[in-house]
Length: 562
Image 1 (cartoon, helix red, strand yellow):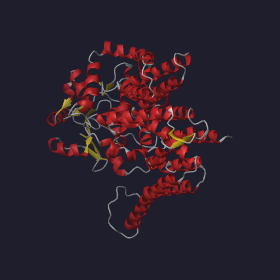
Image 2 (cartoon, helix red, strand yellow; image 1 turned 180 degrees about the vertical axis):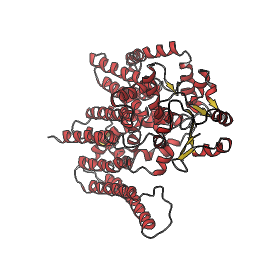
Image 3 (tube, one colour; image 1 turned 90 degrees about the horizontal axis):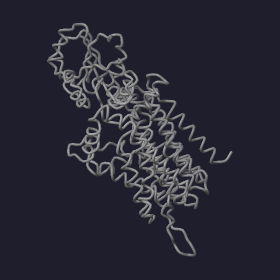
Image 4 (cartoon, rainbow, N blue to C red; image 1 turned 90 degrees about the vertical axis):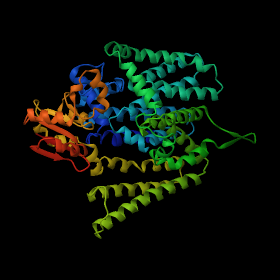
């Protein structure tokens, strides 16, 4: 078996072991996972596949394709954690194989470059963190990666040829699907990357010549649902465009507002452990080659394309007022390709020094973390020191220590190896065990504050179809999902459902604490309140004495029955 095939099987194994196998282990988290699970559940229950609803209310924050993907998974695998996360995991897997394919166009001398580019992508911290959760970002990143990869292949074909048109059509199909997943970013990200690339290649006429076919194809893909939602919900496009795009990117009161430099400081850890090898890769990408005794930089079209694909979307997201770390996920595919190409180029020349420095830095970083965990364990469990730990079950700390120990061993093996591709492979395999274990050793404080479903499950028998359910803003989606309800009353704040309440003329479902107290008095034995502990502590003095009160912890949630 060739080295390239062996490495490709390793990539496939990582997809199955890291991304598929542990999907059902963790409980559902709020608010994102419960939101992107509940909307598809209500689509299935109502039979309305055009207009998204949450808690029975119109919910216009995203188009429908991401919900359709999750709904399809639920219909096949049932209403469970595995099913709702599967579309994200498959999106990461498909993105990895697109990366493998596009990197193979460049890496003809070393066939291991392409599968190692996929390995870099799969083992990057943010890719794994997002790809095993029920959110839409991995699906969007997959479609954008398909858009960019197909366009690059079109740019390498003979102008005007049948092959060029085929790839441009594929690019447009992916772009249209990206639009149906998350909106106008589907056009912004490719344009921001492709135009600078064509300018850098001095292909000025191609900016317009190559644009019309993918744009037309994308419009045709997006048009059917876009027309249906307009006919069904005339206010959708106005709300979606202004609230979810213009205000989020430009408004002074934008949601998740952060300064311009936010991603420059917070994003590097998301690229761990590979960020430690960036200096090595940059040296390889921009190294000089000698042609007839003349020094010349050898920067290929794919390298130029990936640089534009990474830099300009990253700057675009930085300019936006609203920022979340998940926004930069589309920057990871070009990062993986650039890193793999750069590392192979410099290591194939026998220049190991900068790689060794990066790998030794990884040994020191994760070794220090391992020593810190061991020191804390000894201090608290063997010497009686009262040091507050975020997780008090020793077996989780021991599993984390084991994962870090194996990680350090692989980094050391990467330093000692003398073969270029094997050094990269060992470095990439280092975080695999700790990433896998993360699904099992999540701190109790995280579960307490992010997973109210565990509390809801304990009290399944206390809720009947006749129960009147009141919920705080953070728990309404989880209560809808677990109790299969879309008629839950919200207390004091509607949050992201405010537009749906107003549009559906259902403002009566938003109650203040006094109104909740009055309804409880009128319906004894039928009322249930689900909320965060913090909110309940503020409301408790205005409410009747409960017949049942349970919580998931001081930082978690309460289940109250009256």
